[in-house]
Length: 59
Image (cartoon, rainbow, N blue to C red; front, side):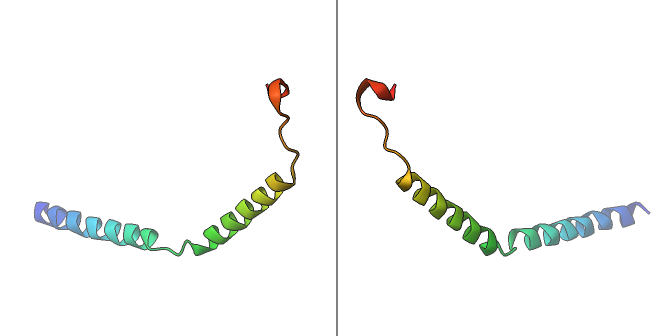
């Protein structure tokens, strides 16, 4: 019975590695597109915004 327990350890490790590899290789391109669109909206909003006052008024 003890030998069976020792054989299950590598089996569980292999299953864990397979799960991790599937997670690491997932497709992440969909998130990048939405983040880039959000950054473009941010740049547009910043370019439309008012300029910071000059001199001591900025403090």
